[in-house]
Length: 129
Image (cartoon, rainbow, N blue to C red; front, top):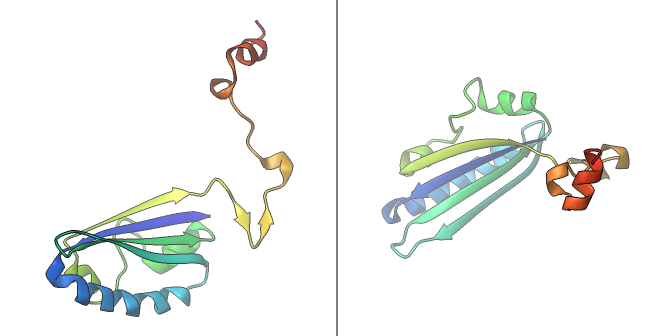
C-alpha cells in the first residue's frame, strides 16, 4: 500500500474557491482503480485561512502512477484547487501496517523487535554476550 498525503495552505480570501474545487475532486478520485481510502480534512486558522490535508491510500505504486502520471511530486487537482492554494506539498509513504481488504498480515510476516527496542539484558543475550 502507498499512502499519498497532500497538504495545502489556503489564505482566507480563497477558502471558498478551494473547497468548491475539492468537492469536485473527490468524486473523480473515488472512481480511480486502486484507490483504497480517501479523506479530506482541514484545520481552520485564526486569520480565516485553512490548512487542508488530503490523505490517499493506494493499493500499489502502479495505481498511483496511473492517477498522477510520471511526476509524483506534483499534485493532480481539478481546475481552481491548485490556483487557490498558496502552497501545496505532496509526500508519499509505504504502508507498514498492511491490511488488505480486511485481511490482516499473517503472523509470520509481523516485524520482530530489533536489538535497539530490547531491554539491555535481552540485547546482550541476542548479541551472544
